[in-house]
Length: 391
Image 1 (spheres, rainbow, N blue to C red):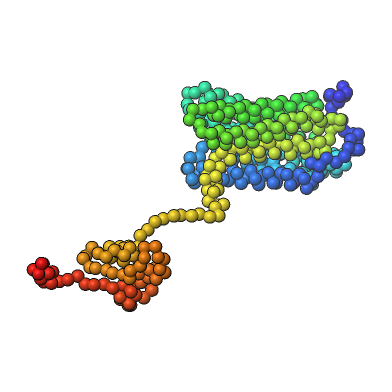
Image 2 (tube, rainbow, N blue to C red):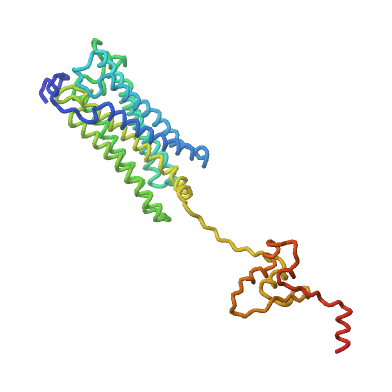
């Protein structure tokens, strides 16, 4: 970079021959941003539903997840609106009113991103605070990170929401004697240093937040299934760090859209999209552990195709019925029941209808005698006494 470029921004057409990047196309910008925003909102709603109505144990982590989704949604909508103000085109090829509109859009996009990046980290830290017992080393580490992240968010939040005094000077191109700093600085070095420092600290915090759950892999009483779920979550967290690193690389490559020429509408889309994806992916990672146990529990019920339930019941309620089926000649009340004799190995099909239960269902109006089952009444007491007298 030349010495003149170090003191002021340079606008030129030296990059007009560059091919149009895929991420600069309006349909790509809208498609990526809206798809991931809808997915993140679905995960957030599931999380809040479980915490508020199922377990009824909402906390500060849920509040910050919701605030994160509100701010990043505002940023995503503004990103889509910025397309009509020249996002994806060369800044020297758009009209003056579009340049001012893009500056307003970028102001909202980055300010909401700075807030979202802070909110999602605070949500994860408050979530970790619930996991680690009070007084332990990890609990104290989480408290320290909460303080540091809060201060980091406040400092860069103020710099993003108030980059100039008054704020309107940030997008007023013809305003004389602008008093701007940080994200609104007019010097490339200060401007680039602000973006790089914010992105670098953001990535380091992401790495730290990914390392903390790793200690849960070896905690006492952990199950293999729980460890596998935690590994899956850590893998998703790695994707968030990869997005943050990629965003840092794009900022360094074109020096926050100032090299080889100041062209934020042309070099900005890739960094803007990666910013949104980073926060949205982090929101998904923060929400999945909350609702996934409930979803996985009912997942099998959704996809069950066959269910067999085996039960054993008996339809014999008295000894007479069972004796009739087993050809027992004596019942409990002393009656004698006889059936047609048959060989022990024969398979007479008519034996099916010697079952009294079946007989009653086939023809309940006829006596058992009509179906080949003869019932002989028990002798009276007088006859029984006469029999023993004869003996």
